[in-house]
Length: 355
Image 1 (cartoon, rainbow, N blue to C red):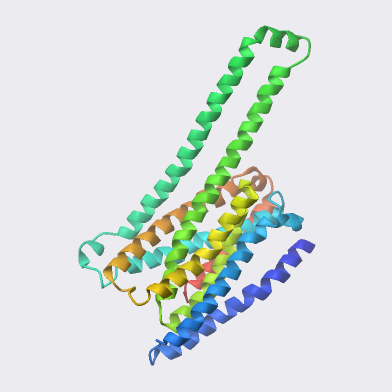
Image 2: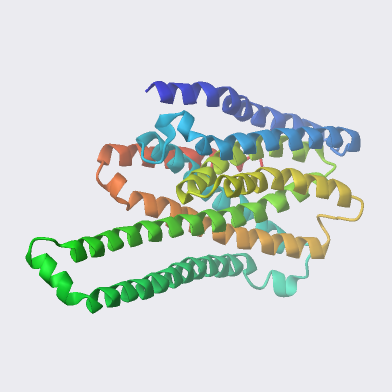
């Protein structure tokens, strides 16, 4: 309980101002939009604020699970970790369905694109479906390759045991079941390594999907000269980067990477959106959000990202945890985890009203 109150005390001063400032910023923008809302100087200041605030929020989010040793309640085997991870998974799920997918629909059905074929065929849902299937294939093939290697190694071990079968049986008859113990040990090790590989595949594929979306969002902010668009985006992105980072950080922690790999993955997550903003600023003179090429590329990337994020959130994060032994054995924890998922998804869905 002490750890939970400490977490609340740390998170509320950050989250509450973000949530409160978003509708206020949106209301100001509505008033300004009556007379036009394009100001390069003001936009530049907001972009600098966006770079710093998004970087800080991302670092806090992705690094907090990685420093769970300092807070025992946040370790992967603790109940609080499962609840926080469920909340973050809800944020990731809502990001895919409520933010990325609608953006792709908007881009690929824009009036700036020719009606044929872009408004004659639902490219967004088609690409998102293919993206989810490709993610499943990566998941499946990675596990199959590992199991095949493990099976070959197990056959080699059993062959070695059979060569000395007489002595193994003789020892077993005298009450020394060393062969049986070795087989049980190998099976346990195989299950552990299989689960570890799955966590690593999940962490890498999830980061890929988040990075694709982050680059697109950063590029859009950097290329925009509209303060009314940028203000609410800063608040929404800070919120979702923090809790999306917690979900990714939890996956990285469970993958048990070395410190160097953890640092690299955290660095790429935290810096992708700010780098996208810098890239957008640099390309603002030649990049147009309404050009057919930009709309098609960004729309297709968003559709890919949406399919990947939706699959990862539902299958590899939520289903894996809720169907796992820890939550299945504890109904009370399962209820709290569902509440956390609905809260995370609900808050992120509400953000779609402004950004």
